[in-house]
Amino acid sequence: MPISINDKHRDFFDSVFEIVKLIPSGRVTSYGAIAKYLGSARSSRMVGWAMNASHKFPNIPAHRVVNRIGMLTGKFHFSSITEMEEKLFDEGIKVEKDQIQDFTAHFWDPMIELNIG
Image 1 (tube, helix red, strand yellow):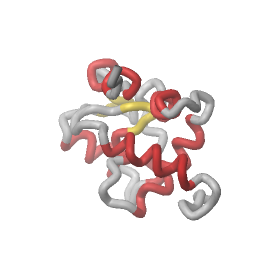
Image 2 (tube, helix red, strand yellow):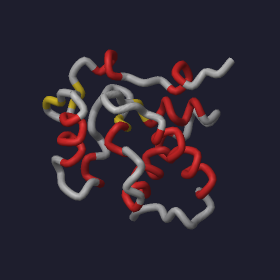
Image 3 (tube, one colour):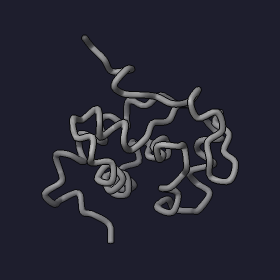
């Protein structure tokens, strides 16, 4: 059952959405990297719930968020089973058997990329 954006998780979800909007085209990050950046390293599952809820908002590139080893674990929450892979392919990211190829080269770490200090 999907988590509602109107429940007690609203602030966390909104923070996740703001980070996901910053992921550049052709790059991906993980649920855990977002959770860590938000100071809640053990909340990667909740980041996943936020991604599931994000499909109501077309400006959130949820296809750029994958698991810690580059697997498309969220693909079942898109309108088709291949939509996530197709969107990544359109951005120059190759996927084979639901695994991003050359994951390290495409990985965007918000702890590094958004470091303002």
